[in-house]
Length: 323
Image 1: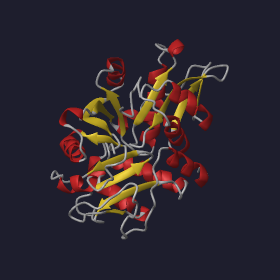
Image 2: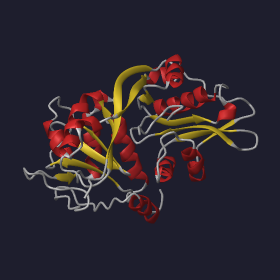
Image 3: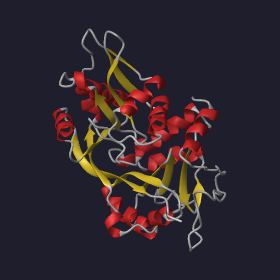
Image 4: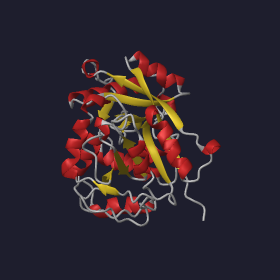
């Protein structure tokens, strides 16, 4: 299940805990430079490697290591999105970890948002990234989300070490599209006079999730988190009915783009993409979007707007280990 199909694809602390607990994750946060003690999720590797949480005060420094990788997945925009979440709610349960606490040289990290892990490394030697992934508790189900094509072999090696068979490794792939900031800033975003553009509210989460091609049990809570903490836009008709929308994924990219069936082929998909692209650009963020390989219609729309493919990005699920 890729978390973005582009036709496709604070709150109170008690609410956030409810969401995270609902998917079976029980992370216990630890202070920076101390061992992460979380028996339900992380374990020591044979070589006594461990994941140590990076203090949120250091996240901007980690983000800046990826300043030259802004157009790619699991890089600058991801880290900025997580920084923004914590700024809105310091108790928001998102964490970033480094293998043995070392990240300043090669930028290797694993970030956790909801039931998903995001990972990257600046080095082309992925041994430390593999060792970091192997510190995750392989008895649990989780997603490794939005990883670049260059990391595919490393993620595969991790899953094989967890007991997955070679033929069971079938990551869901997307083309990773990019639009330069200067081009996004030129977009016209005025809707037709009978329609209005507004940010989505929590009450819209169920509708958004109900037509998301990649919804799963509990995914409405994931959508609700995105609406609460990230930018979004909805198109509303004269009766204040939501007819089209676009959200921002944890990756900092466009995602969950959708137009209801009765309003398709009216340019509403392009409208919300232009709006969100310009919004990201005004914040100085590169505009990116994952589009599943087979989604020819969405690929055509993005390319018509000037987006170009710069990478391939993948999502893969690691099932819980059978007892």
